[in-house]
Amino acid sequence: MEHAHRTNKAYLVGGGIGSLAAAAFLIRDAGFPAENITILEELPLSGGSLDGRGDPGHGYVTRGGRMLEDEAYACLWDLLESVPTLTDRNMSVRQEILDFNRRWPTHAQARLIDADHAIVDAAHLGFDQRDRIELARLLALPESVIGARRIDEFFSEHFFATNFWAMWRTTFAFQNWHSAIELKRYFLRFLQEFPRIHTLAGVRRTRLNQYDSIVRPLLAWLDEQGVRIEHGVRVVDADFTQDEYGRRCERLHLLREGVRDTIEPLRTDLVFLTLGSMTADTGYGGDDTVPELIRDKRDGGWTLWEAISRKAPDFGRPGVFNGSVGEAKWESFTLTMRSPALLKRIEEFSGNAPGTGALMTFKDSNWLLSIVIPHQPHFDGQAEDVFTLWGYSLFTDTVGDHVPKRMAEATGREILDELLGHLGFDDIADEVRATTTVTTVMMPYITSQFLRRSTHDRPDVIPVGSTNFAFLGQFVEIPEDVVFTVEYSVRSAMHAVYGLLGVDRPIPPVYHALSDPKVAFRALETAFTGVCQG
Image (tube, rainbow, N blue to C red; front, side):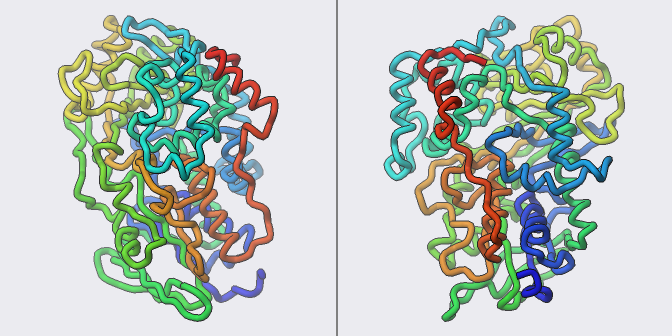
Protein backbone atom coordinates (compact mmCIF):
# COMPACT_ATOMS: atom_id res chain seq x y z
CA MET A 1 0.00 0.00 0.00
CA GLU A 2 2.75 2.45 0.89
CA HIS A 3 4.22 2.49 -2.64
CA ALA A 4 0.93 2.40 -4.54
CA HIS A 5 0.31 6.11 -4.24
CA ARG A 6 3.70 7.83 -4.33
CA THR A 7 2.41 10.18 -7.06
CA ASN A 8 -1.14 10.48 -5.79
CA LYS A 9 -2.32 13.74 -4.30
CA ALA A 10 -4.69 14.50 -1.47
CA TYR A 11 -6.74 17.69 -1.24
CA LEU A 12 -8.23 18.56 2.14
CA VAL A 13 -10.85 21.30 2.17
CA GLY A 14 -10.87 23.32 5.39
CA GLY A 15 -8.09 23.89 7.91
CA GLY A 16 -9.93 22.71 11.02
CA ILE A 17 -8.99 19.81 13.27
CA GLY A 18 -10.77 17.35 10.96
CA SER A 19 -8.48 18.14 8.02
CA LEU A 20 -5.36 18.46 10.17
CA ALA A 21 -6.06 15.05 11.70
CA ALA A 22 -6.76 13.51 8.29
CA ALA A 23 -3.42 14.79 7.00
CA ALA A 24 -1.65 13.28 10.03
CA PHE A 25 -3.38 9.90 9.58
CA LEU A 26 -2.55 9.89 5.85
CA ILE A 27 1.13 10.28 6.69
CA ARG A 28 1.37 8.16 9.83
CA ASP A 29 -0.99 5.29 9.07
CA ALA A 30 -1.32 5.18 5.28
CA GLY A 31 2.26 6.01 4.29
CA PHE A 32 0.99 8.82 2.10
CA PRO A 33 3.70 11.25 0.91
CA ALA A 34 3.29 14.42 2.97
CA GLU A 35 4.51 16.67 0.17
CA ASN A 36 1.51 15.52 -1.91
CA ILE A 37 -1.00 16.69 0.70
CA THR A 38 -2.57 20.13 0.28
CA ILE A 39 -4.92 21.76 2.79
CA LEU A 40 -7.11 24.52 1.37
CA GLU A 41 -8.22 27.07 3.99
CA GLU A 42 -10.15 30.29 3.49
CA LEU A 43 -8.96 32.01 6.66
CA PRO A 44 -5.40 33.29 7.27
CA LEU A 45 -5.16 30.95 10.28
CA SER A 46 -5.66 27.19 10.56
CA GLY A 47 -7.34 25.44 13.45
CA GLY A 48 -10.99 26.12 12.71
CA SER A 49 -12.99 26.35 15.91
CA LEU A 50 -9.95 25.50 18.07
CA ASP A 51 -8.86 29.10 18.42
CA GLY A 52 -6.93 31.24 20.88
CA ARG A 53 -5.34 34.60 20.18
CA GLY A 54 -4.82 38.16 21.31
CA ASP A 55 -2.53 40.25 23.47
CA PRO A 56 -2.74 42.09 26.81
CA GLY A 57 -3.45 45.45 25.17
CA HIS A 58 -6.30 44.48 22.86
CA GLY A 59 -7.45 41.54 24.95
CA TYR A 60 -7.25 37.78 24.55
CA VAL A 61 -10.08 35.67 23.17
CA THR A 62 -11.14 32.07 22.74
CA ARG A 63 -14.59 31.46 21.32
CA GLY A 64 -14.95 28.30 23.39
CA GLY A 65 -13.12 26.08 25.82
CA ARG A 66 -13.00 22.36 25.35
CA MET A 67 -13.31 19.92 28.18
CA LEU A 68 -11.62 16.68 27.18
CA GLU A 69 -12.15 13.31 28.86
CA ASP A 70 -10.07 10.14 29.19
CA GLU A 71 -12.53 7.45 28.16
CA ALA A 72 -14.47 9.19 25.41
CA TYR A 73 -11.62 10.84 23.49
CA ALA A 74 -9.79 7.75 22.23
CA CYS A 75 -9.18 8.95 18.66
CA LEU A 76 -7.90 12.35 19.77
CA TRP A 77 -5.47 10.71 22.22
CA ASP A 78 -4.34 8.33 19.47
CA LEU A 79 -3.52 11.33 17.26
CA LEU A 80 -1.79 13.38 19.96
CA GLU A 81 0.47 10.50 21.01
CA SER A 82 2.26 11.05 17.68
CA VAL A 83 2.58 14.84 17.87
CA PRO A 84 5.52 16.33 19.80
CA THR A 85 5.06 19.46 21.88
CA LEU A 86 6.62 22.73 20.75
CA THR A 87 8.79 22.96 23.85
CA ASP A 88 10.05 19.36 24.12
CA ARG A 89 10.44 17.28 20.96
CA ASN A 90 10.72 14.12 23.08
CA MET A 91 7.34 14.65 24.73
CA SER A 92 4.04 14.05 22.96
CA VAL A 93 1.10 16.44 23.30
CA ARG A 94 -0.81 13.55 24.85
CA GLN A 95 1.86 13.11 27.54
CA GLU A 96 1.90 16.84 28.24
CA ILE A 97 -1.88 16.76 28.82
CA LEU A 98 -1.54 13.74 31.13
CA ASP A 99 1.21 15.42 33.14
CA PHE A 100 -0.63 18.73 33.34
CA ASN A 101 -3.83 17.11 34.65
CA ARG A 102 -1.90 15.15 37.26
CA ARG A 103 -0.52 18.44 38.57
CA TRP A 104 -3.79 20.37 38.20
CA PRO A 105 -6.67 17.93 38.63
CA THR A 106 -10.19 19.27 38.12
CA HIS A 107 -12.46 19.14 41.18
CA ALA A 108 -15.00 21.96 41.18
CA GLN A 109 -16.18 23.01 44.62
CA ALA A 110 -18.56 25.70 43.38
CA ARG A 111 -20.25 24.16 40.35
CA LEU A 112 -23.58 25.92 40.97
CA ILE A 113 -24.20 29.35 42.55
CA ASP A 114 -27.70 30.51 43.53
CA ALA A 115 -29.32 33.93 43.46
CA ASP A 116 -28.06 34.68 46.98
CA HIS A 117 -24.39 34.22 45.95
CA ALA A 118 -24.34 30.89 47.83
CA ILE A 119 -22.67 27.69 46.65
CA VAL A 120 -25.32 25.04 45.99
CA ASP A 121 -24.87 21.46 47.22
CA ALA A 122 -24.71 20.19 43.66
CA ALA A 123 -24.09 16.57 44.72
CA HIS A 124 -27.87 16.41 45.20
CA LEU A 125 -29.16 16.12 41.65
CA GLY A 126 -32.82 16.79 42.48
CA PHE A 127 -34.47 13.89 40.62
CA ASP A 128 -37.93 12.66 41.53
CA GLN A 129 -39.38 9.32 40.48
CA ARG A 130 -40.91 10.73 37.31
CA ASP A 131 -37.55 12.22 36.26
CA ARG A 132 -35.92 8.79 36.61
CA ILE A 133 -38.65 7.10 34.59
CA GLU A 134 -38.35 9.71 31.83
CA LEU A 135 -34.56 9.33 31.82
CA ALA A 136 -34.80 5.54 31.57
CA ARG A 137 -37.36 5.80 28.78
CA LEU A 138 -35.13 8.03 26.65
CA LEU A 139 -32.17 5.70 27.15
CA ALA A 140 -34.29 2.70 26.14
CA LEU A 141 -35.79 4.14 22.96
CA PRO A 142 -33.99 3.53 19.65
CA GLU A 143 -33.00 6.60 17.63
CA SER A 144 -35.41 5.59 14.85
CA VAL A 145 -38.29 5.98 17.30
CA ILE A 146 -37.01 9.21 18.87
CA GLY A 147 -36.67 10.81 15.44
CA ALA A 148 -36.60 14.59 15.12
CA ARG A 149 -38.20 15.26 18.50
CA ARG A 150 -37.00 17.83 21.03
CA ILE A 151 -35.55 17.17 24.48
CA ASP A 152 -38.51 18.87 26.15
CA GLU A 153 -40.87 16.38 24.54
CA PHE A 154 -39.37 13.66 26.76
CA PHE A 155 -39.15 15.38 30.15
CA SER A 156 -41.53 17.22 32.45
CA GLU A 157 -40.94 20.70 33.89
CA HIS A 158 -39.54 19.28 37.13
CA PHE A 159 -36.60 17.66 35.32
CA PHE A 160 -35.58 21.00 33.81
CA ALA A 161 -35.50 22.60 37.28
CA THR A 162 -33.10 20.01 38.75
CA ASN A 163 -29.49 20.64 39.69
CA PHE A 164 -28.61 17.81 37.32
CA TRP A 165 -30.02 19.57 34.28
CA ALA A 166 -28.41 22.90 35.26
CA MET A 167 -25.03 21.12 35.35
CA TRP A 168 -25.50 18.82 32.36
CA ARG A 169 -26.87 21.45 30.00
CA THR A 170 -24.17 24.02 30.82
CA THR A 171 -21.35 21.45 30.68
CA PHE A 172 -22.36 20.44 27.15
CA ALA A 173 -24.42 23.49 25.98
CA PHE A 174 -27.82 21.87 25.50
CA GLN A 175 -31.01 23.86 25.03
CA ASN A 176 -34.38 22.31 25.90
CA TRP A 177 -35.39 22.45 22.23
CA HIS A 178 -32.33 20.57 20.96
CA SER A 179 -32.37 17.04 19.53
CA ALA A 180 -33.42 14.31 21.95
CA ILE A 181 -31.25 11.88 19.96
CA GLU A 182 -28.16 13.95 20.69
CA LEU A 183 -29.01 14.10 24.39
CA LYS A 184 -29.45 10.33 24.49
CA ARG A 185 -26.06 9.87 22.79
CA TYR A 186 -24.46 12.19 25.35
CA PHE A 187 -26.04 10.28 28.23
CA LEU A 188 -24.66 7.00 26.90
CA ARG A 189 -21.27 8.41 25.91
CA PHE A 190 -20.70 10.25 29.21
CA LEU A 191 -22.58 8.02 31.62
CA GLN A 192 -19.30 7.65 33.51
CA GLU A 193 -19.60 11.38 34.38
CA PHE A 194 -22.90 11.01 36.26
CA PRO A 195 -21.28 10.36 39.68
CA ARG A 196 -18.86 13.28 39.26
CA ILE A 197 -20.94 15.78 37.26
CA HIS A 198 -21.00 18.10 40.32
CA THR A 199 -17.19 18.35 40.43
CA LEU A 200 -16.36 17.67 36.76
CA ALA A 201 -13.50 15.53 38.06
CA GLY A 202 -13.52 13.60 34.80
CA VAL A 203 -12.53 16.68 32.79
CA ARG A 204 -9.07 16.83 31.20
CA ARG A 205 -7.64 20.16 30.08
CA THR A 206 -4.75 21.30 27.96
CA ARG A 207 -1.88 23.32 29.48
CA LEU A 208 -2.76 26.37 27.38
CA ASN A 209 -5.79 27.07 25.18
CA GLN A 210 -6.43 24.45 22.52
CA TYR A 211 -4.96 26.49 19.68
CA ASP A 212 -1.62 26.82 21.46
CA SER A 213 -1.64 23.33 23.00
CA ILE A 214 -3.07 21.21 20.16
CA VAL A 215 -3.28 23.08 16.86
CA ARG A 216 0.14 24.75 16.82
CA PRO A 217 2.10 21.56 17.64
CA LEU A 218 0.07 19.64 15.05
CA LEU A 219 0.68 22.33 12.42
CA ALA A 220 4.40 22.31 13.20
CA TRP A 221 4.54 18.51 12.82
CA LEU A 222 2.64 18.59 9.52
CA ASP A 223 4.91 21.37 8.24
CA GLU A 224 8.00 19.33 9.14
CA GLN A 225 6.61 16.40 7.19
CA GLY A 226 6.08 18.61 4.13
CA VAL A 227 2.31 19.20 4.07
CA ARG A 228 1.26 22.33 2.15
CA ILE A 229 -1.39 24.67 3.56
CA GLU A 230 -2.82 27.27 1.19
CA HIS A 231 -4.62 30.14 2.91
CA GLY A 232 -7.03 32.53 1.23
CA VAL A 233 -8.71 29.68 -0.67
CA ARG A 234 -12.48 29.28 -0.46
CA VAL A 235 -13.81 26.08 -2.02
CA VAL A 236 -17.36 26.89 -3.14
CA ASP A 237 -18.43 23.77 -5.06
CA ALA A 238 -17.37 20.32 -6.20
CA ASP A 239 -18.35 18.15 -9.14
CA PHE A 240 -18.88 14.42 -8.90
CA THR A 241 -19.13 11.76 -11.57
CA GLN A 242 -20.18 8.13 -11.61
CA ASP A 243 -18.84 5.31 -13.73
CA GLU A 244 -18.50 1.53 -13.52
CA TYR A 245 -15.99 1.92 -10.64
CA GLY A 246 -18.24 4.09 -8.47
CA ARG A 247 -18.57 7.78 -7.57
CA ARG A 248 -15.65 10.15 -7.47
CA CYS A 249 -14.93 13.84 -7.04
CA GLU A 250 -13.58 15.15 -10.33
CA ARG A 251 -13.42 18.90 -9.79
CA LEU A 252 -13.17 21.51 -7.04
CA HIS A 253 -14.38 25.05 -7.72
CA LEU A 254 -12.61 27.65 -5.67
CA LEU A 255 -11.86 31.30 -5.11
CA ARG A 256 -8.16 31.88 -4.58
CA GLU A 257 -7.81 35.37 -3.10
CA GLY A 258 -11.15 36.11 -4.77
CA VAL A 259 -10.14 34.82 -8.21
CA ARG A 260 -12.03 31.83 -9.65
CA ASP A 261 -9.99 28.68 -10.15
CA THR A 262 -10.47 24.92 -10.34
CA ILE A 263 -8.61 21.83 -9.23
CA GLU A 264 -9.21 18.61 -11.14
CA PRO A 265 -8.13 15.62 -9.04
CA LEU A 266 -7.03 12.55 -10.96
CA ARG A 267 -8.95 9.31 -10.53
CA THR A 268 -6.40 8.11 -7.98
CA ASP A 269 -6.23 11.40 -6.02
CA LEU A 270 -8.10 11.83 -2.77
CA VAL A 271 -10.47 14.61 -1.71
CA PHE A 272 -11.59 15.29 1.89
CA LEU A 273 -14.33 17.88 2.30
CA THR A 274 -15.14 19.51 5.65
CA LEU A 275 -18.88 20.23 5.75
CA GLY A 276 -20.36 23.23 7.57
CA SER A 277 -18.93 25.16 10.51
CA MET A 278 -20.16 25.75 14.05
CA THR A 279 -18.16 28.98 14.27
CA ALA A 280 -19.09 30.37 10.84
CA ASP A 281 -19.91 34.09 10.77
CA THR A 282 -18.65 34.81 14.27
CA GLY A 283 -19.27 38.40 15.38
CA TYR A 284 -16.87 40.11 17.81
CA GLY A 285 -17.45 42.94 20.28
CA GLY A 286 -15.40 44.81 22.86
CA ASP A 287 -15.71 46.94 25.99
CA ASP A 288 -18.01 49.46 24.33
CA THR A 289 -19.36 47.54 21.34
CA VAL A 290 -21.84 44.72 20.79
CA PRO A 291 -21.03 41.71 18.59
CA GLU A 292 -23.17 41.53 15.46
CA LEU A 293 -25.44 38.53 15.02
CA ILE A 294 -24.69 37.65 11.40
CA ARG A 295 -27.54 35.78 9.74
CA ASP A 296 -26.72 36.15 6.03
CA LYS A 297 -23.87 33.63 5.71
CA ARG A 298 -20.98 35.90 4.75
CA ASP A 299 -17.85 33.88 5.35
CA GLY A 300 -18.38 30.78 3.24
CA GLY A 301 -18.49 28.28 6.10
CA TRP A 302 -21.65 26.69 4.68
CA THR A 303 -21.27 27.46 0.95
CA LEU A 304 -19.65 24.19 -0.11
CA TRP A 305 -22.08 21.89 1.68
CA GLU A 306 -25.08 23.85 0.40
CA ALA A 307 -23.76 23.56 -3.15
CA ILE A 308 -22.99 19.84 -3.15
CA SER A 309 -26.06 18.82 -1.14
CA ARG A 310 -28.18 19.60 -4.18
CA LYS A 311 -26.26 17.07 -6.26
CA ALA A 312 -27.00 13.86 -4.38
CA PRO A 313 -29.70 12.88 -1.88
CA ASP A 314 -27.17 11.22 0.44
CA PHE A 315 -24.97 14.35 0.78
CA GLY A 316 -27.09 15.60 3.69
CA ARG A 317 -29.33 18.60 4.31
CA PRO A 318 -27.41 21.64 5.58
CA GLY A 319 -30.60 23.70 5.93
CA VAL A 320 -31.59 21.55 8.91
CA PHE A 321 -28.52 22.85 10.73
CA ASN A 322 -28.00 26.41 9.47
CA GLY A 323 -31.63 27.41 9.06
CA SER A 324 -32.42 28.16 12.72
CA VAL A 325 -29.95 30.73 14.05
CA GLY A 326 -32.31 31.53 16.92
CA GLU A 327 -32.08 27.94 18.18
CA ALA A 328 -28.33 27.48 17.59
CA LYS A 329 -26.67 30.69 18.77
CA TRP A 330 -25.05 31.74 22.00
CA GLU A 331 -22.52 34.29 23.17
CA SER A 332 -19.20 33.90 24.97
CA PHE A 333 -16.72 36.37 26.41
CA THR A 334 -13.10 36.48 27.51
CA LEU A 335 -11.87 38.80 30.25
CA THR A 336 -8.28 40.05 30.06
CA MET A 337 -7.41 41.35 33.52
CA ARG A 338 -4.38 43.44 34.47
CA SER A 339 -5.12 42.97 38.18
CA PRO A 340 -5.37 39.67 40.08
CA ALA A 341 -8.23 41.00 42.26
CA LEU A 342 -11.12 39.12 40.60
CA LEU A 343 -9.26 35.81 40.30
CA LYS A 344 -8.11 35.97 43.92
CA ARG A 345 -11.61 36.70 45.16
CA ILE A 346 -13.15 33.89 43.09
CA GLU A 347 -10.49 31.51 44.41
CA GLU A 348 -11.30 32.49 48.00
CA PHE A 349 -15.03 32.15 47.32
CA SER A 350 -14.88 28.82 45.48
CA GLY A 351 -11.93 27.10 47.11
CA ASN A 352 -10.57 26.37 43.64
CA ALA A 353 -7.22 27.58 42.32
CA PRO A 354 -7.32 28.67 38.66
CA GLY A 355 -7.44 25.59 36.42
CA THR A 356 -9.02 23.28 39.01
CA GLY A 357 -12.61 24.48 39.10
CA ALA A 358 -14.04 23.88 35.63
CA LEU A 359 -17.42 25.59 35.12
CA MET A 360 -19.14 27.79 37.68
CA THR A 361 -22.79 28.30 36.72
CA PHE A 362 -25.11 30.98 38.14
CA LYS A 363 -28.09 28.70 37.90
CA ASP A 364 -30.78 31.29 38.63
CA SER A 365 -29.38 33.94 36.30
CA ASN A 366 -31.63 35.17 33.50
CA TRP A 367 -28.82 34.67 31.00
CA LEU A 368 -27.86 31.26 32.45
CA LEU A 369 -24.33 32.58 32.87
CA SER A 370 -21.33 30.27 33.37
CA ILE A 371 -17.63 31.06 33.79
CA VAL A 372 -14.40 29.13 34.03
CA ILE A 373 -11.00 30.30 35.21
CA PRO A 374 -8.31 28.39 33.33
CA HIS A 375 -4.87 27.71 34.69
CA GLN A 376 -2.71 30.80 34.16
CA PRO A 377 -1.16 31.57 31.76
CA HIS A 378 -3.79 30.39 29.26
CA PHE A 379 -2.11 31.91 26.19
CA ASP A 380 1.43 31.48 24.94
CA GLY A 381 3.43 34.55 25.90
CA GLN A 382 0.85 35.80 28.42
CA ALA A 383 2.61 37.92 31.06
CA GLU A 384 2.63 36.91 34.72
CA ASP A 385 0.67 40.00 35.73
CA VAL A 386 -2.09 39.41 33.17
CA PHE A 387 -4.97 37.00 33.83
CA THR A 388 -7.87 35.62 31.79
CA LEU A 389 -11.34 34.25 32.43
CA TRP A 390 -13.81 32.73 29.96
CA GLY A 391 -17.58 32.68 30.18
CA TYR A 392 -20.71 32.11 28.17
CA SER A 393 -24.48 32.35 28.38
CA LEU A 394 -27.09 30.08 26.84
CA PHE A 395 -29.91 32.64 27.07
CA THR A 396 -28.85 35.68 25.04
CA ASP A 397 -32.35 37.07 24.45
CA THR A 398 -33.48 37.55 28.07
CA VAL A 399 -32.90 40.72 30.10
CA GLY A 400 -30.12 40.48 32.68
CA ASP A 401 -30.58 40.46 36.45
CA HIS A 402 -28.19 43.39 37.02
CA VAL A 403 -28.07 44.96 33.54
CA PRO A 404 -31.47 45.86 32.05
CA LYS A 405 -30.58 44.52 28.62
CA ARG A 406 -30.63 41.31 26.68
CA MET A 407 -27.12 39.84 26.61
CA ALA A 408 -27.14 40.12 22.80
CA GLU A 409 -27.52 43.91 23.19
CA ALA A 410 -24.96 44.33 25.98
CA THR A 411 -21.45 45.74 25.60
CA GLY A 412 -18.45 44.00 27.11
CA ARG A 413 -18.47 46.39 30.08
CA GLU A 414 -22.15 45.63 30.72
CA ILE A 415 -21.52 41.88 30.59
CA LEU A 416 -18.73 42.39 33.14
CA ASP A 417 -21.21 44.34 35.32
CA GLU A 418 -23.70 41.46 35.10
CA LEU A 419 -21.03 38.98 36.16
CA LEU A 420 -19.89 41.16 39.08
CA GLY A 421 -23.50 41.47 40.17
CA HIS A 422 -23.93 37.70 40.28
CA LEU A 423 -20.69 37.30 42.22
CA GLY A 424 -21.61 40.04 44.68
CA PHE A 425 -18.07 41.42 44.82
CA ASP A 426 -19.09 45.08 45.09
CA ASP A 427 -16.00 46.11 47.06
CA ILE A 428 -13.60 45.29 44.23
CA ALA A 429 -15.92 46.12 41.33
CA ASP A 430 -14.32 49.49 40.51
CA GLU A 431 -10.81 48.02 40.43
CA VAL A 432 -11.94 45.13 38.24
CA ARG A 433 -13.73 47.44 35.81
CA ALA A 434 -10.70 49.74 35.55
CA THR A 435 -8.23 46.93 34.84
CA THR A 436 -10.25 44.57 32.59
CA THR A 437 -10.72 44.34 28.84
CA VAL A 438 -13.72 42.32 27.64
CA THR A 439 -13.91 40.61 24.25
CA THR A 440 -17.34 39.26 23.32
CA VAL A 441 -18.19 36.66 20.69
CA MET A 442 -21.58 35.96 19.09
CA MET A 443 -21.75 32.63 17.27
CA PRO A 444 -24.92 32.08 15.23
CA TYR A 445 -24.31 28.35 14.61
CA ILE A 446 -22.41 27.25 17.71
CA THR A 447 -24.85 24.48 18.67
CA SER A 448 -26.26 23.89 15.19
CA GLN A 449 -25.09 20.27 15.32
CA PHE A 450 -27.55 19.73 18.23
CA LEU A 451 -30.57 20.87 16.22
CA ARG A 452 -33.37 18.37 15.64
CA ARG A 453 -32.65 16.13 12.70
CA SER A 454 -33.71 12.97 10.95
CA THR A 455 -31.62 9.96 10.05
CA HIS A 456 -30.40 11.17 6.66
CA ASP A 457 -29.78 14.84 7.40
CA ARG A 458 -26.08 14.10 7.98
CA PRO A 459 -24.14 12.26 5.27
CA ASP A 460 -21.91 9.26 5.86
CA VAL A 461 -18.18 9.95 6.15
CA ILE A 462 -17.66 7.89 3.00
CA PRO A 463 -20.83 7.97 0.88
CA VAL A 464 -21.89 4.69 -0.71
CA GLY A 465 -19.87 4.02 -3.88
CA SER A 466 -17.28 6.74 -3.25
CA THR A 467 -13.86 5.81 -4.58
CA ASN A 468 -11.86 8.98 -3.83
CA PHE A 469 -13.79 11.39 -1.58
CA ALA A 470 -14.96 11.59 2.02
CA PHE A 471 -16.64 14.10 4.31
CA LEU A 472 -15.19 15.45 7.58
CA GLY A 473 -16.24 17.42 10.63
CA GLN A 474 -19.18 17.91 12.93
CA PHE A 475 -21.94 17.39 10.38
CA VAL A 476 -21.24 13.84 9.20
CA GLU A 477 -22.89 10.75 10.62
CA ILE A 478 -20.82 8.57 12.95
CA PRO A 479 -23.09 6.07 14.73
CA GLU A 480 -23.14 6.38 18.55
CA ASP A 481 -20.56 9.17 18.79
CA VAL A 482 -21.34 12.69 20.01
CA VAL A 483 -20.99 15.95 18.08
CA PHE A 484 -19.66 19.19 19.59
CA THR A 485 -16.46 17.39 20.59
CA VAL A 486 -12.95 17.50 19.16
CA GLU A 487 -13.17 13.70 19.21
CA TYR A 488 -15.98 13.66 16.63
CA SER A 489 -13.95 15.56 14.02
CA VAL A 490 -10.83 13.45 14.64
CA ARG A 491 -12.85 10.22 14.46
CA SER A 492 -14.36 11.37 11.16
CA ALA A 493 -10.82 11.87 9.81
CA MET A 494 -9.78 8.40 10.93
CA HIS A 495 -12.83 6.78 9.30
CA ALA A 496 -12.21 8.76 6.10
CA VAL A 497 -8.52 7.92 5.73
CA TYR A 498 -8.74 4.29 6.83
CA GLY A 499 -11.85 3.68 4.74
CA LEU A 500 -10.60 5.20 1.48
CA LEU A 501 -7.12 3.67 1.73
CA GLY A 502 -7.94 0.35 3.37
CA VAL A 503 -5.64 1.01 6.33
CA ASP A 504 -5.28 -2.19 8.33
CA ARG A 505 -5.29 -0.58 11.77
CA PRO A 506 -8.23 -0.70 14.17
CA ILE A 507 -10.14 2.49 14.89
CA PRO A 508 -10.57 2.86 18.67
CA PRO A 509 -14.14 1.83 19.50
CA VAL A 510 -16.69 4.33 20.79
CA TYR A 511 -16.52 4.05 24.57
CA HIS A 512 -19.61 2.54 26.23
CA ALA A 513 -19.83 3.05 29.98
CA LEU A 514 -22.64 0.48 30.13
CA SER A 515 -20.23 -2.22 28.96
CA ASP A 516 -18.14 -1.76 32.12
CA PRO A 517 -20.22 -3.22 34.99
CA LYS A 518 -18.55 -1.12 37.72
CA VAL A 519 -18.87 2.15 35.82
CA ALA A 520 -22.43 1.36 34.79
CA PHE A 521 -23.41 0.48 38.36
CA ARG A 522 -22.02 3.73 39.78
CA ALA A 523 -23.73 5.79 37.09
CA LEU A 524 -27.09 4.07 37.56
CA GLU A 525 -26.74 4.27 41.35
CA THR A 526 -26.24 8.04 41.00
CA ALA A 527 -29.27 8.35 38.74
CA PHE A 528 -31.54 6.36 41.04
CA THR A 529 -30.37 7.76 44.38
CA GLY A 530 -30.06 11.28 42.97
CA VAL A 531 -26.83 11.83 44.89
CA CYS A 532 -23.36 12.01 43.32
CA GLN A 533 -20.79 9.65 44.79
CA GLY A 534 -17.57 11.34 43.64
